[in-house]
Length: 308
Image 1: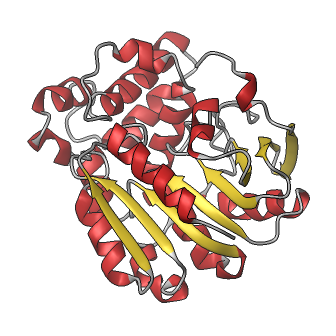
Image 2 (image 1 turned 180 degrees about the horizontal axis):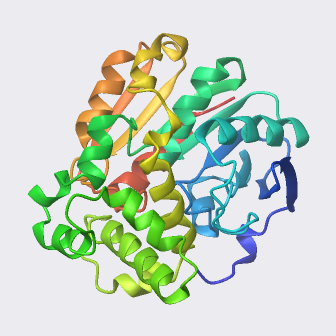
């Protein structure tokens, strides 16, 4: 995305969070506005200026940051001391450092997972949840995305991705090992193929050039981090979110989910909605991307409803 002064942060920097990790963050919008923290997807994709388009800069005070190992955070692509619990702790460190008390949590895809896990651990710091593309990070969700479930819809895409994995090997673990190899050519190839796989069914819109899309974000850190988290079941007990839903049952939650989301299947959004007492479910004529037109319009509409 071209540089645009309308998206300039009023403050940016790095915060040391321990374990050798430094997180890059930006503060955007109105310092006296409604506080929101933006949780990017992946894991590992990082945030971009485009993500700021969800927020009216006059109304919202937005904290955006790159999670451990992602994009501008350092060390780049590091999986050391990088678990879901580490990310949850990092959110609190950032909020404390930047003097945020209680915030709306906005997250899509993996960002929805992290938002839900954070809220379960720290419900007292969450004003509300705005979630897109629900991914519950349970066995079903993982098996659908990386265990072959996708081949029912995209057999050609699955064949390209899967043929690089020796028979009997776990795809996430094998790709991760190849991406972490010292041989740069091999590492780059497997990172590219992992990201190419996801981008092949990321949006309902026709993708004319996947290479062009991959050049718009930090796909290598996304590929490494996604494989690392998935290979470790996202460092969560099976069905952690739904098994702990009582802790967030009454937090006001908005869910926006594409009917044709092949990465995060719609059934996960329905399951979450059914388990909550105070949620609003919007099923859109869209795919996974938050920028598919119907998803984007609904997320903007839901943000406009927030008054305090």
